Length: 378
Image (cartoon, rainbow, N blue to C red):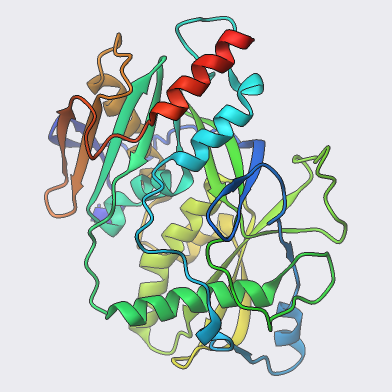
């Protein structure tokens, strides 16, 4: 059995193999709300940044497609690098929608969920066995819900910072080509790209026994009609994920795509019930010449034996269990943080408890005080 076909159970710092055929159950995620983030990174409780997919991929089927991702690069408005927003936007959402999320049956359990986090954190956990990236996740338990927040990443890359920014901006520019404010109306690609703007949905789901509420930035939706913001029918709305990748010319590029990108595409999409990923394949100069759709359910098969989707779900389930087992059941303190550090080369966790307000704290006083006021006024 290859490394990528194995699932590991971590109990403390010990690792043992378990049957990869036993897959953690994952409940189909449902949307429980939405919000936008404006160009100043402020929370907005509306659909102002919702985008609709503009089907340019048909052009690549009929004639030569050339989308220059460098257009307007000098006018890009990038997301400030010094931002450390932690879980703030999700906390604003919880406050804004407290009347729908608060558990009125149990005074000791404020929210109807075991965990609150962002999708990116779950994606990172799910891909851990295969991508072997270091990460630190902080956990705080308050009113019988565990809040999870990814600590600032200190990953090092083999490419210069300006190159990283360029590749990142190419991705945002591709989204501008492919998304529009009004269904079936071509997007205005002459405008500067504001990389801070987002539209996010908040999902509820369950992984085995772990109930989850998590936010996720959504690229766009497939629809030829505008969504009714006052009464969106989320059961009929289909989201789409957009990606860019270097055009595959050599065998090692094909392997990189399948081993390192497909797994992230699958995990991100699976968590929010996205059915398709559309990828713009570019050359080294940032010119997209082909756009291909990928069915999310096919990505594990297309990857060959590079990674195992069951291990992704199982590892996430095991991690959440470890977090629950680590934090004492009667804990109810927003200023106690448990740090879970995963080391790619050691394959085990280092767990530390940090008491009192500290640099890792992420549940702010404004959230605690305002949530208490909401509860008192119900």
